[in-house]
Image (cartoon, rainbow, N blue to C red):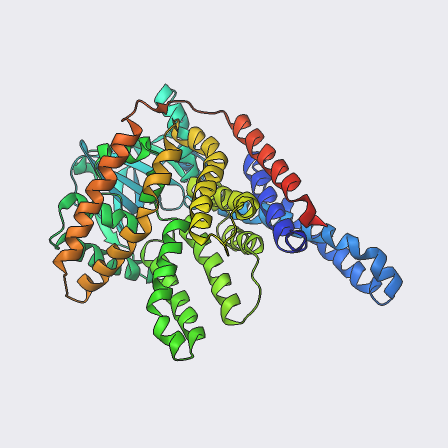
Length: 494
């Protein structure tokens, strides 16, 4: 833990602090230049002091000051440049008749389609458009009348207030109903992102044309490709009520399972004495997977941490999970400061941070003497810790607290690695033109078992508390959790 204080923790917290401060106070970018300039001045002063060993030793504690100021200023400046702009700010009272948007996702609902799109010229502001049945797909450039879009802050209904935090975390500032006849496709995005999107479409088309049942195919696309557009709302609610909604979103759990699957495939290289190549090839495949599935923040975080771990193994260097987590967050926030306000990123970081701080050292079972009991106890502790860390965010963003989260995850989560491994193997074979019916049958039966078990254990919505925790409650709980982590690991700080 002492290495964490000397490593990327302070820069990461300073960067996040600068981003939050800039977001809340709407600070202009040039304000961040001042702490950056002060950081450079302090650094130059300390470098000059280093010529005298005694003075350098006394001034050593001040190195943390320039690091804090530097990343604080970077956070302010970076957030200011990345901050989505409202249409009203750009055009004032003379908004254009039509807006051009890049479609980032299309979800088929009972009433029609729900389109998420980035509004051009707004530095990334998104709109959620409800419409009828359309032919719009991800990557299309659409033209819509601006009069149908309204800022989400104007929705004062109780439902609107509840979903507003979730929408803001996704960068969605506008919503509205637009008739399909008023949505005009005028082009399509190009470049590397479109290239990976085409690969994703090819893989999903192979899954859809397989002999899997439609519900299983939609579930497989969700947990492997991150595409939840085909899932029925009832299916989502069943998993959400059972506390299993996280298995439908690409996260560190999926990346970890895929990494383990790849290491098993690379075993022949280990027997040939080239195990390092196996880890390097696995890193490349993991990043290709993240690219094809759309660079979700949680999967990027997990992939960065896995990359650090694999490089450490290949170079025979010790890897500390805390440093890896902070380094991953630091890289993500430098590239995209808006990731800090994404619910997936927050849940991923909070859960992994809690697991590193508590679960890794709370297991009382000896791995050497009782390996099976060790893993069972570890799974129970990991579920308890993740639940204790994440329930406040789930309540704040989703306005619900699933009471059966713990037993449902303990009983069903161990099945997911096996199911996901079979799904990856089945999908890989599909892409090369080979379908094994036995694997497909196992996937169908496994999906039905997960769905029915989740519904039975959760009791539908009977064991769900519909409550939205206020923001101050979320912050208070996370601060208390951090204090507990420091007290629990206090021996490691010395």
